[in-house]
Image: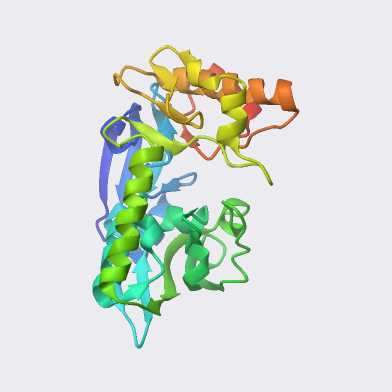
Length: 302
């Protein structure tokens, strides 16, 4: 079996931040069998969707990673059930459901990420979250191979699932959606896109979405705004002027260290004023820069 692999590959342009360096090996499996082959051939391989929520070190990463972007198949099952694989993109999923006359994924129309990552972090917006419609998730681990977890067994919470606490990778998921008029679905997606445009930076301005999770019964953006974070910048990275919980690489000259130092400045400001330790939503990939590794430890970035 041949799995596509790129060696010493610069992943900068794959990331939403448009920041990165060369990765030792990047594998692109197209099936569960190919995924399994890579897992067992590479001891410490890391798994990502399409790096949309990941800060990759400007110094690169020596190891191997799997990108599930080529595992993008989907099929409609009986009635209102369908299965989608980990690499299927959120906006495509929303459009597919609308075309079939099913509601439940309108919130994903503006998401840059893929299904695997969205399930792992239980992505949500506009009063909807991906776990609302999950029936079961097809998973993979080295110990168990391919196995299935029910919605309850996934232990979904706010921006969390069992996948973040154990070495479990998402292969795909079965969903149950509700029938709805396609025009009404489109209306909701248009409203969601308009809200996103008004409240979040365009993906044309490199950014990684929300930087920190909302603390319980509070808002990360509000806390950051109150400490004056909209005026914060480090090197080529700066806090977006319209929302304090976004970091932008506006001129595409920010380094990964710039972003992490800026995150630390934001985190420290909130901690000093309110005693609240914000939890990052951003993931990190890198192993060469000692200062970055130290900042990730302090910020608890996985």
